[in-house]
Amino acid sequence: MTTSSALDSFLDKWRTRWPEWSVADPFVPEAQRSLAVAWFTLLQEFDDILNTNGDPTPSDAKLAWWGEELRSWAAQRSRHPLGRLLEPVRAPWAALADTLPDLIDARSAALEPAQALRALQPYAAAVAAVEAVMFDTPARGDVATPVLVQTLAQRLQEAGVAAVPRSLLDADGDTAAQQWARQLLAQWPARVAGPRVRRMYASLARTRLQASAQGRELKVTPMRTLLRTWWAGRG
Image 1 (cartoon, rainbow, N blue to C red):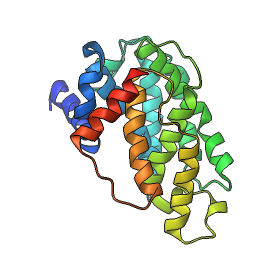
Image 2 (spheres, rainbow, N blue to C red):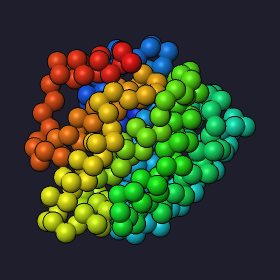
Image 3 (cartoon, one colour):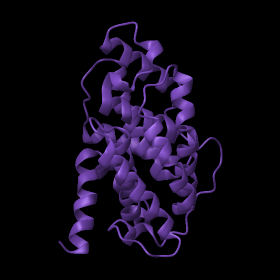
């Protein structure tokens, strides 16, 4: 497989999971479109590692490899196809790499919601710091919390009840998951701080979580997505 086809394979995997982005993409500055998809693809890699089922050994090894890879980007020695697009950005890659082990610790079910939030705060802050550089948007306001809540929302949707803090598990599984979803939504405003691409991505992800919190099937239409992302992108 050529480097180009390998890169396309990774990017297409994220696009398949987020088909709504095809509607949002025109609102992204043209120079940032490929960069945004590559960045969110990388974050999806980390989400998948966080939400590993079964034997975590292969995922833990993969995460350690990613830590080395991110540190190599400062010296422009990338090995992964995503590095073609992301490595040239002079972002704090090493600081992000330092927080990756937190993803392993965060797999364990938290006792309380506050513990679940604390576990990934350094990681979310590092992600937000990279985005501020990557998308040339000075950090104003709380840019880390939207990343944190979106990461936990993704975990809830991927791992289900296993991602719910234990203090919420007195009710049946579905209700406990909905309770956790509602708590996350309470900390996740409809319009968040950060770069335009984060605001639009957060809007799409929040819509998915709202459906989970209400116990209903997600219904996505191009017009709703268009209006939602346009509104989120305005800032």
